[in-house]
Length: 619
Image (cartoon, rainbow, N blue to C red; front, side):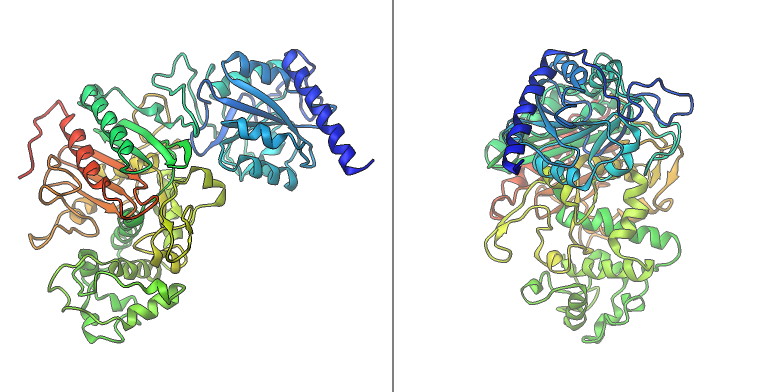
């Protein structure tokens, strides 16, 4: 039989099977491994268990156009009919397709994928073959994909996917229950009875059923997101709902006026999240919606989310002295200008080194070592400590200091000591290609890279350094940054938590114990400006004047930072308030400056929404 004839026959059989699946919900369950078998007391999976949901796609928002793809032969194509029929009964618009266990797919699959907003892949196989995984990655480009496993043995080969659930068998009743859980009609609360692949016993993410889940988003378009179900009634945080509603309208209006293609916002107070939302689209030419799990290029927020906390930890462990010259840790640092031997770590943090504001080294330098050499040769523009000049070079050096003192790369140290313990799974340098559908693009670069930049750092120097630098390169979401802001307001102490609907807690995964991430009392010491000479604190900025991106109602005790791509974070311990606003205002061009007024307006609206105390204009 020729390949063309086989493909034609497979396509015809798939079409017939799809019709059969749509017509019947009571087709016999598959007789694959453990299919339909009663759950034994020692089984690892005893109930529908959500093991990974990196982007918060589960439960699926209502009304989605779902492509339900089975991994099965043509003969087995109808085995998941109960699952598909129940998805439809839960209000989903479902279309059907099939992938062969060896990875082959009919030509009609591409058209079905183009019509879908969400892809659900069902399997009872014992493993996912490399060819199947390749097909799944190809069809999921630009669309969320969730794996529904009806065989626990497949999980070790699914670890690279963004979202997957596992059910205890594949009987018709189990399939229907899995569909209801996936659609949000029933709670998902299974936990592993034993280790399974990369997952430990007791793991299992909880999701409330639609009837119980207050605030679960049930409609969305493009990129669905379920993380904003944690929002609480603003009154529980001493804030006014009507004011925050007007803030939502303000953001939408500014985006409509081209402040940016999209934005994501997190507002929290007294340990409770009152806003965790996305607005607009990823790009003016891409109608997929921004969500709380959209990844943004943080630009200079890297300085305060990665490099600064790394330095705080190293100082707290007695490995780093802020008063010591940087040359103690970097012997190559002061070779060209002897004055550089006097530059301390503290002066680097305060931007009081004498370095120029910027150097376009990316034009003729490549790699971290080339940048070390350039910094070593760079002469100072003024004596150390004489004046404040904000310069990326200071944090390039500090990134190298972290690596020298910690004995490991900056990205690894930040992941192990900050992002990992906080559960910030979407935060890091050089994001994996599998995250591409969730990454907001930045500039159409017509000078350096000659492409629409997406998924790689926008900052040219950080790009030339390899994507990891102390001054830029970090990607994250407002969901992760809400957890980080909450940590800062808790003086570096991470409380135990359990993800739960309407909890208001920035808890991305269960935490059994209270853990200290940053040294005690370090947060206050590092976030207060030392004098009136500038607004700079140690790594952080503080609000100054009416033009501050913190607006005019955040207090003098507030601290924050901005990023060139249109990102900002402001934290106010006096008001017990934080605002994280991420935009991709540089898409398509860095010439766009409309985001600056938006930042101030959002900060002011958030502060003025407070109702349990008087909030005065900052003097």
